[in-house]
Length: 295
Ligand code: UTP
Image 1 (tube, rainbow, N blue to C red):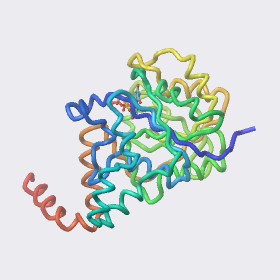
Image 2 (cartoon, rainbow, N blue to C red):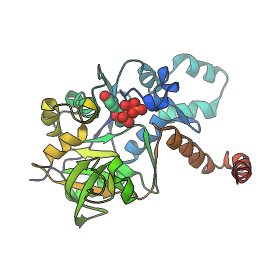
Image 3 (tube, protein in one colour):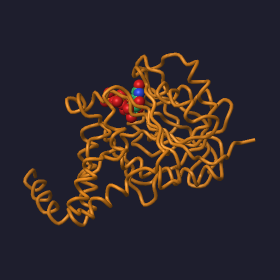
């Protein structure tokens, strides 16, 4: 029977080296870089909470302790804000503090790949389906990407992967899925290929960094050999799991910003700033003037 148990837990693998964002990431995890005034990880956690996730599991690495601190109370700051009666700031911090006992942290001791980072969360996830959110990808849509996936999962059960369309000549850069029968806001997946050779991709739907997976992925990842880049690859594990369990794709219709890359990060800052009533008036004019000056 296809597993449709509720998705209660979300895994955030934050143990990567972030080499595309050096030198900033020498001392600051890329997940803590700010988009307007919030760290990237906050946007991704908010997406998980919007989808009904109850427990947040972070797979961290060395020099990522600041992420754990961010999701805790900062006692001195809290005290000072109270002494100064800074009500708005106190409320802001209270609003983003996870409830006691709803976060867990484990360490990936060496960055052996995304598949390995996910496997490190196996005991914290246990024997139940879970969401996996790549914490450097920010999704902006009318409905959160994971929320849409959970709705599809309630129909399809099994495993669900979010996909978006790319230009066909760009498909070789991504994990690509084959398109089967329509289901909800997506379709059944017929196959998965990581970075297909140019001209061989089964479609132009690429895997965008959000997953709902069944716990049977863990024993597969445990046995897994190194794949592309000499890393333990999640996609290789999913390809094996798809031999035993159904996979559906959720077609996310919104904007995705890869904040692990400089261009995606800058675009995210501009897009989110222009949505903010308190910031747009002072940046829109200068931005337009800047673009015009380049013409
Ligand atoms: P990326 O390849 O985008 O992240 O992995 P990276 O390795 O940190 O970045 P670059 O390429 O060097 O700039 C996708 C996600 O998987 C996590 C990363 O933190 C990122 O969120 N990851 C990757 C791990 O947690 N552990 C790993 O061993 C590899």
